[in-house]
Image 1 (tube, helix red, strand yellow):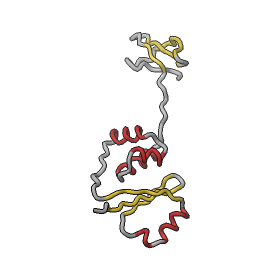
Image 2 (cartoon, helix red, strand yellow):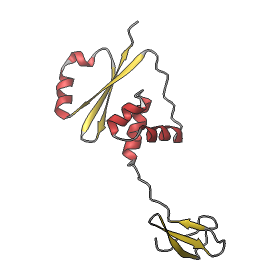
Image 3 (cartoon, one colour):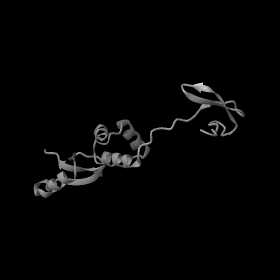
Image 4 (tube, one colour):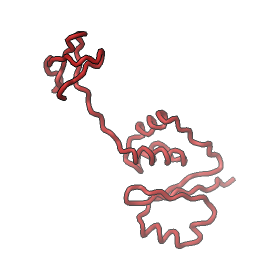
Length: 139
């Protein structure tokens, strides 16, 4: 970091003030505040954020989304809170999903029986496709 700025007063008159836990410390001259360089967090691609929120809306649990996308379920919960997403109430439908490559998807769609009796959505998931089906609960 070339010219750090004080997080308390936004002044640019800072001097180095030692190293703590392998991180450079600075001291602000005007307000005498000590601070470290901000850590750059791990930034997750917005593609995965969008997919995680879509899957959540479709009724898939946080842990299942974690298994599918490889993103922490806690991150998914935080995104749901951040974007104020509410999953619709699902009492009579049960979502199931399959992850297929292109040839498997084509073979699945060829069979007419697979297309009847349930709602279906297909979404891209990296180099594969995810097919979500909704079936009614049996009473």
